[in-house]
Image (tube, rainbow, N blue to C red):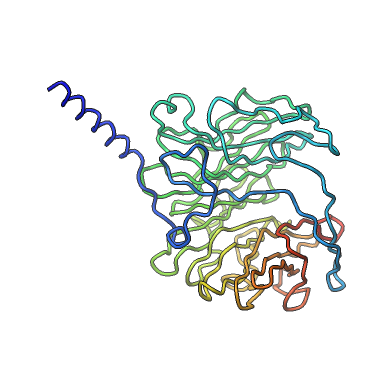
Length: 396
């Protein structure tokens, strides 16, 4: 009898544990293609996805845009995110990097400058503290490191979101321009069965400036987040949104959060692209005028075997500047996928995409009035997927 009681009690414990981990509702893209993002290490009971990696910029071949601005290679400098500052080939900190956190299993780090020759690092970690026993949560922490490799904030980092019983994953981060950082992520708090987007701002001392455990950016099914500065201490946050799955499938939305943590645009964000079928995995950068340039990786509106490269510009009020549902940069047969684009010092958008039919990358310059500057098809930049401005009218 005692054995039976023990078995029943164990089964009840397992049932209660599973009940606290609701199955995540999947975006249409994930049901179709599978979640493409790298898994957290080690695996935990919650569903996983991938953050957008910010690998090293690969030099592009020297070339010229058509009389507009130069395109030239970036110097090859061996920078390794999260492992310390590098000048030339000699490490500025310990040869193999400094340990930012070693009390929990950590993954998916992001890093930004702190404005004083140091850096701010954030990461997702598995089950710190009391939750390490019951494995009820994944949390997000952050640490600031000065130019000498010394920790500025509390040992093992400060909590960005440490809400028990939820999984806070896949952070994206930018500098707030004032020695701190703004971090956005997806998490499944509330037992809704799907993720939503939250954000937090840390000051230069590591204090949380917004609501504890983050302000709600979008109360709809949302994730796959990216963000950029709004130029005023706040952020513009882009994300995949599943609210229209019954009609148009996954779409791209965006929200602006001011420096105090208040949403500026419409509740739950403004539509960036709500075209038929799937639009997925947004990338965002500032247009340097209080707005943003948003591209997305997958756009299936013309069929699953003919993905096109598309993007949109928003102004500081959240109004679209280009064609409804985004400007299409390439409509060639086969698949073209946009990658993260930038603004030049004139406020024009420099848009890049990869063409799988010819295994080459292309770039287009388009102004705020939706006028293409480099012909109808753009210019070839080689087999690469990162671009940056040289701040002098050229492109790296």
